[in-house]
Image 1 (tube, helix red, strand yellow):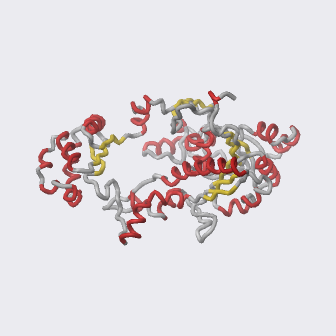
Image 2: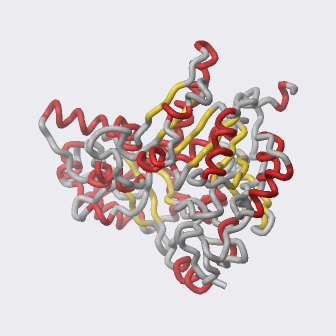
Image 3: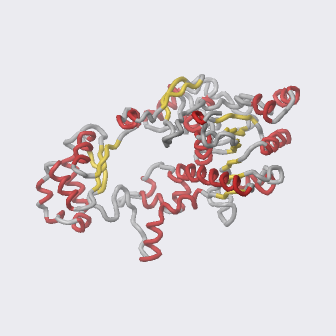
Length: 445
């Protein structure tokens, strides 16, 4: 292999039993930088919140939810399920590039044998299931390290492998509610249920998990030791809220909901601009920036208003200030105002929807988005690699795998099953590339 096409994780093999977002995001990042990632997923039962097979929505319902801006757990191309909607699920396909798929039910004797053979041949196992699931399957680190002492196992439960919340099931949004993020994101005059979905805990856990795995690989290169990494979603996200935690421990002060506001800056919010549902974000940290903002907007009366003469006063009369600014910003095109404010050193940015984001001149100039063709799905635009390295060019290498797409390669070439052993597993319905009618009734057709 030449250095020209060498990626830093080339040669490492990762197995994953992951669901939803946090776990798949870890392996997405590892796969993007060269690791061979093998998804272990059953066809004999539904693995919830992965390919969307537990909730397949017909065309009419998809079209109705799409009109409301709802992704419905991973909408299908052209809002049509097709014959194999689990291979056309946008949520799954957004993170599964550069991966392989092995159909294997670890809860069956045959599946467990195949999985343990795989563990012998991988460097890393990533899972983000509720702990009792892994314990029931008898694939804890204590059991797997007997097979592969150099194994690195990343476990990502919601709240940890111990403690009273150990086996509580949660998505990122539940974790964020438990640790206070939804409270902080709420609007001062509203309630936390109005904050909408963000799943910041999942996104951050993906990056932190990939960092933890690569750090453990470096440690293993030095010591020869494998290890378990425990990274609860709650604890990986909590440091991001350190400022508010310290404010309470130091000042005994509980923060109010922040919404779009800032604890010190004013103005600091989202303001309407010309057109339907068009907005701009503006932040002023001092008097000089506020003066520049008002001059740009021709809002000279705000400069002469005693309520807005200083940062402290602007914060005191923040609602009145925001109402006044909105009357001026709504006369401007958001992108035009964004450029004008940046030119006078006022922090500002247009609020873009998905279409505007895809047309962003900044992202297009950097070739961030990549087109990816998937058989049966078509050619669509996908987010690209999130970092650029000076001496390591990189791009998406392969499309998301269909269910069980790499069965023969993994079972026969990697795990060294004979053709007959592999065929027997297929004939028993334990290995395949489709869900049976009993597992997923074709109610959408």
